[in-house]
Length: 240
Image (cartoon, rainbow, N blue to C red):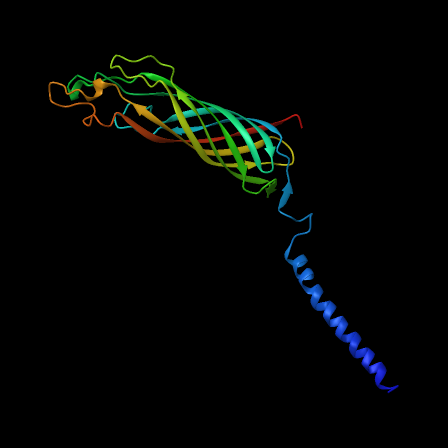
């Protein structure tokens, strides 16, 4: 008995050590699979207030009557403020100077297009920007989704063919990508869908002497179009 007790103690100690090793293995493996803070691709970021100036290309989609502006360059001014977690509220103003078709709707088809006047499209919208990486950057990048609403107008009077763009409600949504270097200006890229509705006057459905009309189906007096803006610019943090 005096000889077997040390062996029993050693055996019990071995079992305890093995159990401790097995219990500690997940922690060790987890540490190996993770990143040390100094090597992590993620960095904490504070969403404060920023102002951004961007420029790019606005793709106006053609409408049934083809009175929509032609695709053209545009500029954008944007303000963001963090509201908690990964979310920020934004407000932005966009301006695109372009051209559009002007018609004499009751003229014959060959003489219906009378001019292509210049037009300045003003777009103002506001909404929510949600970072997909939370309150962290990934390799100094932050991808995000946005959604909002606003108004769009060319502030022009009705033309000689009775068409007027007016002030329209717009739904906006899209994707964004921000680059936040440790020093210097921040860079942002945004792709946004602006959806609004065109409305047409009665004269667009009146048949001319050649039995053609600018729009044949009088039931389609309005049409929704999805227009896309691609903007690249710089951001400056305020009050940091």
